[in-house]
Image (cartoon, rainbow, N blue to C red; front, side, top):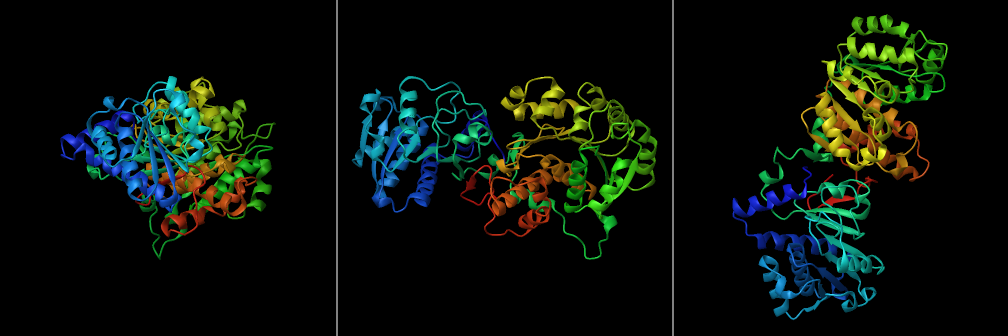
Length: 533
């Protein structure tokens, strides 16, 4: 599913009207109906409900007038607060305003706060003030109305976007509605999906307003939202006669004294993701512990430094191993440390190994002042930084990274011609061509040590199976988050650990292939009139 900016959505609307010949008033009607359906879903019976609709003078307000008409026809007691003089309402919005006026609905112009009634007397508040075009902070009367709605103690449903938010940014640009429900139209807007703005949206529904399908699938729209339907065909069916060699061999270079667990979790996650063979290359002194901890994982004990990290001397042995066997993917980083000799080993491997490589954790930190290596490399490279690691790569603050996660990931992936997985709430995946994928799975319970190691192992596991690179990466990220959602559903939102995800990776895969009732995604609360996940 595509994710759009306000400008892109306007272009889609205009093409629907001007090229396809769909009257704008029909799109407005469909939008209003989608909101009414969402209200029916959560607030039936409507015959007993008192509803206040806050309407601006533009098309968002026009949607509100459509909502008012249908709610009135359902028996609700509706009052419209028009935050403008009636004679300033134009176009399709004006037509719908005139209709409800002729129906006898109560319309009250509110030009100052003292004209607003006690909102606490209503059962539901509808926010139809601003649409998706807002770029500056709400001020004056609008700011006061927004505050009054937020403090009324009543549920709020926002039309297209909570008023006061920007469609294009995760940042909070000023006073805004804190919605319980938001119905957006056609396609999700970028600002609705990224935090902290996403915290203000409540349950997000993507309402179908009958826009032509080609408009919703434009190739020039580069940002996408991962869905179960998108990921499902990425997972190939296994042939009855398949053997372990068919599912590839991943080598993971990881571990050091005190960080053996990171290596163990990444290795086991690769197996749980379906890799046929997993070899863990680790400091020699950790070998016995690892062989007994995970018997299914093979090990390659390597020379180590006096601090218990993999030494530069390991390069020839490791390179010979990679050349001797049929290896599909090399993973570097979990629990590795940034010891100078270990760092030199990593950099030389990047220059010399002719395999796709996944780089995580300390593998990324080792590259911070050696970004030229990334441009020299000819084979595919997948980097998986969290915001702190990304900030170190670019020598900027974490705040700068978080303020433009999509733009920064997209620019970095294109500049260095690699795949970037920028982890966090709504992980951002960017490819070398400028395409971006947002992941809706995962939840705050996953904010604990080792989760990134599990993701790294899953990436290695899927890539070992020779899936197309982008499909393997997006599936790994989606299923990693879904495994976390399954763990949280079973255990609760507090106290889940990275190892809780390991046994749920196959269950997450199964739930995508064979949908299981009762599995809930715990992060972004997204629905659609046609099932989204």
